[in-house]
Image (cartoon, rainbow, N blue to C red; front, side, top):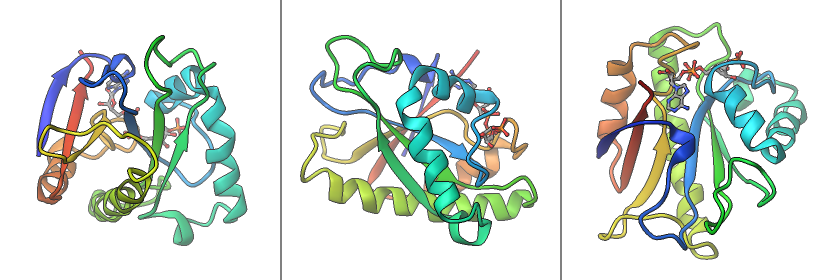
Length: 175
Ligand SMILES: Nc1ncnc2c1ncn2[C@@H]1O[C@H](COP(=O)(O)OP(=O)(O)OC[C@H]2O[C@H](OP(=O)(O)O)[C@H](O)[C@@H]2O)[C@@H](O)[C@H]1O
């Protein structure tokens, strides 16, 4: 299920103030958050950049080992992107492209990475109170992933996200 919310993803506040919010974004395999929302996340949640970058280096920045996978990185409470009184946000990295993939390939990797993310979150929720809907479905907050620097028409990514069950996607639309 997709819910569109007008506004800045970084300003997301969960309905339950005790819940940990997941902010997901599309990542490359080079270990760089240079532009777009990745650069904003790097500035707002600096504690999450090294774990992302190290993860890429550890796998030799090898697209064949990274594309279609995801990692979840808890931010530090000292990161300026965290909101006072709320638990530190967790940043989810979806490895969807390495700049040489076609739109179709990016969409395929997006589906795999999102499903892997959900598997990780289902395990994590036994230890951490993750943001969820009243019916228990996990909530994943994201921008229109792939629709900027990765240059994939949003409708293609949207079609894939619509097929994923058991999760509520909050897609923030930055005006
Ligand atoms: N605060 C905000 N709240 C809500 N929505 C926001 C927003 N700020 C921007 N948007 C929108 O969010 C969509 C995605 O646009 P982006 O271009 O960011 O990401 P993308 O997924 O296409 O591409 C990933 C590569 O971008 C970087 O590349 P570099 O490092 O520079 O090489 C990464 O590292 C990857 O490699 C566009 O609709 C933006 O309008």
